[in-house]
Structure formats: C-alpha cells, structure tokens
Amino acid sequence: MKFTAGSLESSDCLITIAPSEDLVINIESVVFEQFGDDILRVISETLKLHKITKLNVLCQDKGALDYTIKSRLETAIKRMGEQS
Amino acid sequence: MSRSYLFIPGNTPNMVQNLDIFESDAVIIDFEDSVMSYDKDAARILIQNFLQKFPLQEGTIYIRINDVENSHFEADILATRDLKIAGYVLPKASVEAIDKLNQLSSGLSIIPIIESPIALLESKQIATSKNVIGLLFGAEDYTKEMGIERTLEAKELLYPRSHIAVVCRAYNIEAIDTPYTAKDDDAGLQQDAMNAKALGFTAKALIHPNQVDTINRIFAPSPEEILQAKRILKKSEELQKGAFSLDGKMIDLPIIEKAKKVLEKAQKYGL
Image (cartoon, rainbow over all chains, first blue to last red; front, top):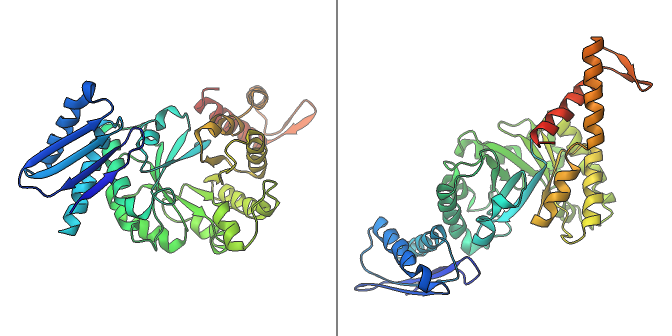
C-alpha cells in the first residue's frame, strides 16, 4: 500500500512511500543537479529522526525548500502509521 | 494594532514561505476553508516546520483554525499552541467556542469571526470574552445565513458592520472588516475599505497580496490627519487648557485624545 503527501505545484513536492524490506530513496527533481544531495540529506535525516530504516520513498520535487520536503515526508509517515 | 490581515492558505508552500514579503501588518494562516479535509494534517505539519525554521516577527502571525464543531478543532490548537504565533482566528464564533479554545490554548490572543445572525446578537459577550483582542466580520457566511445576496454596493452589510464597529469601540478592541472578494477591482476595494473605516473599523482582512497596499494606506492616518493632530497637541500643550479654539473649531478632551491616537498610529507605521 502506498501513502502520499504534498503536490506537484511549484515550491512543493509529492512524497510517495511504501513499506519495503530495504531503504530505497528515489528523487525526481527539476533542480536535481544543484540540490539532489540536499534533498537526499533532508529525507535521510527525517527518516532517522523517526527511527525508520526500511522504507521505499519517492520524492517528486518541484523546487521545495527543506522544511517542505521534511513536512511532506512526515505527513506521509503519519498517514502510513494511522493505517497500520 | 494592525491595518491589514492577509489570509494565506495553510497548505501552500509558495505562499507560506513568502508571507513576510507581502507587507501585510498581520497574516492569518488558514487551516479552514482553503485546506481540503484530507489535507488538514499536511497543513498542520507544514506550518509547524515552517514556523520552527523561520520564526517571524512577534505578534504578526495568526492561525485560522477549524470551528469548534469540526473534528480538526482540537488538533489544530494542539499542533500550534507552542509555536511563535500571536493567536487564533476562530470561525463560527460563540462564547462557548471561545471558552473551549481558551482551555486548550495557553493564553494566546483570539479574534472571533462574527459570521452568523446569532453571533452578531451575541457579539457583546463574545467581545468581552477572555483573550479576545478584536472581532472580524465574515460577510460571506453572514449573508448566506441571512439568505440574502452580498452585493458590491454592500447596503445589506450596513447594519452588521455598524453593530460590530460599535461593539469593538465600546470595548476597545480591534474592529476588522470582512475581505473584499473581487480581488482585481481596486476601485471597489478602496470604496469598500473607506466605507468600513467611516463606520469605525480599524482594519480589514484581505484575500490577495495585491490588496495590501490599498488597505494599509486607507487604514493609516492621512498626512492631513497627522498634521492636524500635531497642531492640536502643540496648541494643547501651549495653552494647558481642557478646551480651546483652533481654526474656529472647539477642541476639547475627546478631540485631543483622538489626536494622540492618530500620532500613535502614525508612529507605529513610520509615517
């Protein structure tokens, strides 16, 4: 089952997560070359904060700032927690 | 004391992260009508992270929570009460709803929205409830509940506006007028704002950043008002009398106090 949060509007990102046996992070971004590493860092730190080591994460970024990426991922995690 | 209260949708990052450049005196981050029911949680988390990362000028940020009958009411408050916000804008206000909000929040300011005939009738009790610093008139819901059409001429709003302005002035709290919804009609906005100011409103809510300049200008003292206030206070200090004549008009204590308020406002807005 997949859980999403966010949107594909400018300055936002759409995060899709699904349970997984490993940690898999995929990033699609209009600014991947400049900020791909930063986006990966925000996602990794947020997962660490929530003590999550196994998850499939897709981040479709439309120029979101750090706080937005963190927020959308936290929302998706919360929604997954409410379903389990 | 603010002239403009700009509504910003609570789940829209490109609006939220630019709210300090819109030059509105105060901002109302909206969790109610502009956020779909399935995304209320997303808005709360977005605003928590935003305000923790970018603390804004104290006293300028309000959050419009969902009303007391809505299942998100409590979650909205619990998620935001420890953030650096000035307070809450409360839709569908009643004395009971304000009491519940006060129980959950920690002494933050409250701006109830008067948007029903019953709230209008109870506006005195609402205005004098704990932590209430102003009333905001919500004309869209008010006209819906009255079963009347809202027009640009706004004759149908004369009574509720007058009533709310009197109540606010009687209890020395802010009187905040309803937004003008035709966002590209600047002439209409000016007329609407001037009508509200003439009735005693001290500020206006707005729904689009392009309305900020007009609202700030109309609800600030004009250069003529400032000059006249300065003349009144200068003569009052010179004469040391409770009443005197200036330009053939009688000046007494209420006019002197009004002049002081004009200069207080002018100083606040750097005029």
